[in-house]
Amino acid sequence: MAEREMIFNIPLGRVKNISRSRRANYAVKLVRNFVARHMNVPEENVWIDNRVNEEIWKRGIEKPPSKITVKAVRFEEEESVEVLMPE
View: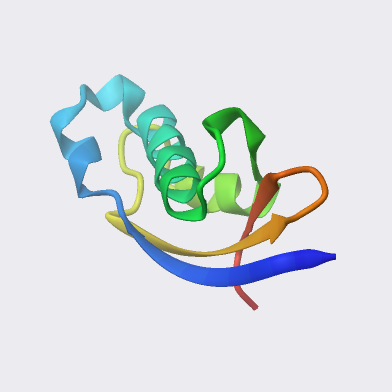
């Protein structure tokens, strides 16, 4: 079962400093890094749902959103975190 659930507003403004052809990729890495840091798990144990990925990539690789709201669910058995879109 889930140990804890949290809602995060993740700022993605730093992607504007990256070259236009890599911005959405970098935004996904920022989401993974932010959630891992705040839920105290390694980055390789963060699983990003397909709906979150589609929301970042919706406007293409050059124009990801400047912020995104996600729900992070931490599982105590595996020490892993699942990143979902909030309902």
